[in-house]
Amino acid sequence: MKIRPRNNQGIIYKLLCLHFILPVAIGTLIYLLFRPVNLTVFHWAERAGLYSFILKARDLFNVGGYMPEWFVYSLPNGLWAYSFMFFISVIWGGTKSFGKTFFVSLVVALSVGSELGQLLNVVPGTFCLYDVFFYTLGLFAGYYLGKLYYKGDMLNEKV
Image (cartoon, rainbow, N blue to C red; front, side, top):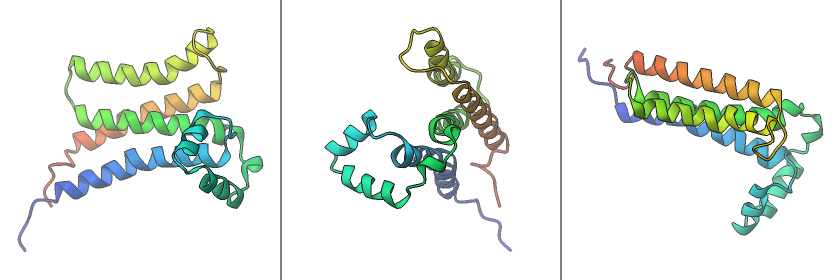
């Protein structure tokens, strides 16, 4: 039996789909299906000609009243934080550099920092402990799973 190098493009595609695109897509669907329609994203959808399609999908999945608040309002934040942190963790891998520190800090500042800014009335919005919890969970999971993928050198592994 001949040993051949693993198809790196296939692994990279799966990583991007599973850990980057899928969490963002799920978070976006939660927003579009269950959040109030007065959010800015619905104005964008209207300009893109997607608003009527979204309203039909909302009618089809009309279970919003039965979803827990953390699912509708906080989970999408954690999914976004996970996705972004995983992506950064895999890209920068095991390097210790200013660039990696900058991007990791950026994700933390945009997520948990924005919630703390809301608590201090510096950032518009309402502070929510569930948001902090899901952001933090997503950040740690994304960072450490990204490190595991990198440490296992899955992108260069041979079969």
